Length: 442
Image 1 (cartoon, helix red, strand yellow):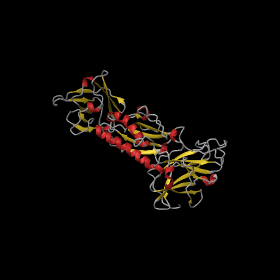
Image 2 (cartoon, helix red, strand yellow):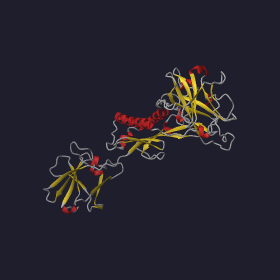
Image 3 (cartoon, helix red, strand yellow):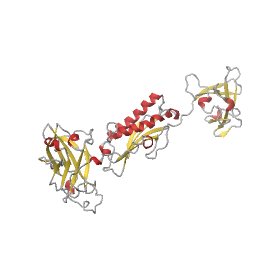
Image 4 (cartoon, helix red, strand yellow):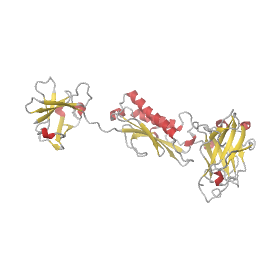
């Protein structure tokens, strides 16, 4: 018969440690016991499991031990890291076990390492949440997902290295984007390693919020986030917003300064002194709206650039109202800087289905109206959806300085009905990362 014996860490307080054992799930008849091996070096202690009845027919049987303290708070050895005497060079928790036969002459020695628990993922989440003031539906583009996901992972890895937190080598950090949620995940080697980053987590959710929104570069959010709040959370792995607790936890709305925690992105509408006429400027008042992006193309000369709005047919907020029943886009007007009249070299329009742009001479309102007029469009919904209205600007200016009011490369455009009583006002902006589009089809 064979008797298992395990070398015990001399520092283990065996008097306060209770060991119970099972073989194939059945409690052993005799509890394991600590003893001092004969002839062993001073201070040596071993754990012995007797009367198991082990022999050649027990190949594959499982022997398990459970560790606990005799009294609550006792300095007992309740894990393998504190119980076992690891051999030189082996990781903590590695145990040296011998199977001794009843003659005490044969003792096969093996090293047994503890089974590592499955990785515990920690994840950061960024989610643009629409509020009542959101104008456009938002889709996170791949390049923004890449930029934010990479930033989140690099920040976590750099901080872990800085504070000596060990990462789980079984998990390669990763990120993904789904349902307008950017999720970046990594794993710590243990909860204790994760705890080293808890204070950092409460600070970094604010930094991620500002980086994603653009508030790290100015006091204004990125224009395409107008009407959105950014939720930024760190926790366990889950499907946002159901994020379980993780090794570290933080929430922007709880951990950010009070004056920033409930930030809703958008322009200060008290500064939007436009249009100069009296009409219904409410977004979605009519069926005519605009794409949130202004697209850039080469102008007719090397010294000019086209900045083009794309018209969209949308659902009117009240289709039965006088504005909601509008079925014709009569004209458009754009808020521009009167002082730069000479830098507007032309206006170009192209209804849906047309192959080329039609150019017009610049047309302005009165000297104080700050208004570029694009009159006599008379587009039906079929002609309007996908139509373009373009400004051709001299290269000595750009859309950011030409349009008012200086809100992150944003222009404001009205679409009027024939009665001129309905004129929904929309912002559209040039994305600084958008490619400069070729002149094909211009």
